[in-house]
Amino acid sequence: MKKITMFLLASSVVLGLAACGPKGDSASDSPEKSSNKEYDLLVWEDQSKSAGIEDAVKAFEKENDVKIKVVEKAYGGQIEDLRLDGPAGTGADVITIPGDQIGTAVTEGLIKELAVDEDTQSMYTESAMQSQIVDGKVYGLPKAVETQILYYNKALISENELPKTVDEWQAYSKEVTTDDSYGLLALWDQIYYAQGVLSGYGSYVFGQNDDGSYDPSDIGLANKGAIEGAEVIKTFYDEGLFPSGLVGEQGINVLDSLFTEGKAAAVISGPWNVAPYKDAGVDYGIKELPMLGNGEHMGSFIGVKSYNVSSYTKNAELAEKFVTFISNEENSKVRYEKTGEVPAVTALADDPSVKESESAVAIAEQSKYAELTPGITEMNSVWKPIDAALQTVATGKAEPKEALTQAVDQIKSAIAANGN
Image (tube, rainbow, N blue to C red; front, side, top):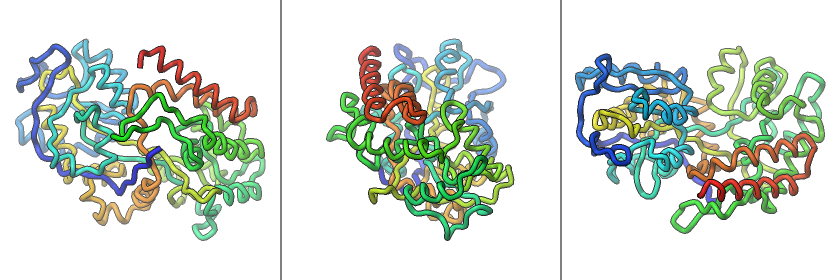
């Protein structure tokens, strides 16, 4: 799998906006006022993140003599909501979604192509901008990036004592694990987290063509490297270093609870826990992920959040103008300062407010060893089968080779059944 090297991410975006409506609809190619008397644009923002754009929204309203309504929704589920609300005329004009949903959204005709010139695209790092491009066309602008990082409880382990490798963390965990205390915890029964180990041994989700596009017929989740990495993961469960509850849907709640209660020395999580862990009163430190036993750095998936324009909008020009405005350098900095989300703007990489942030520095460092989550429709067929396989490995119900091979067969069948 081709790895994506990142720094922080980029944009001070230039306007160059011309719109395309949903399939068969050219009415939104010219600006018009919304028929809604209460507002001109409806924006779906991520949960607990609207404060980050509050000032920018007010400025945009004043500059354009318009009214913007902002509603918070979990960003991972906005596409599902748009499928229903878009045709009904109640969906948002602007949404924020994960980069790995772009391919599906484009295939289903849910989001509009944006007219973003080369100069504007060059303001973003390759990985962030690439997450918004399908078949050479741009469908959004990056707003923030996230990847997995290591949190450690300073009351239980100091920075100088931190193990450097997964093998060392395993040895440390053996020393400290009791009925109610643990060393390192991770959700390695889920591919989103486990791929950080598997990829270091040679696993990949989809192979890539010479032009960088994904080849869904080439699945590397049951190759020699994947099996070797899964064997490493398996030992943590076999040796009782992870509690039995750290499997399945409730695993994330168990992991968070054990860390916030001071019962785990370290956990692998993401920047979404910076504020919750702090609010829980944990005195923690943050580092990039450790090395693997084979000398490779532990990898991770890069998540890119973006602003995108709904194909169902009745005010396409204004919506695109808003997306450009809300994603510029000035507004991205304010959003970072208020939400803690690492901005998708390279110009901010050297900003003191970013450089002094332990989490931002850790994300930037870990991003050097990270890869984009494939943003093609076929990725939808990957999650459930491979997670189920990893869970059978974690619970000792199957060996890695058997479980992963069966999962890949299921993924191929699902892709074929979906006509991809």
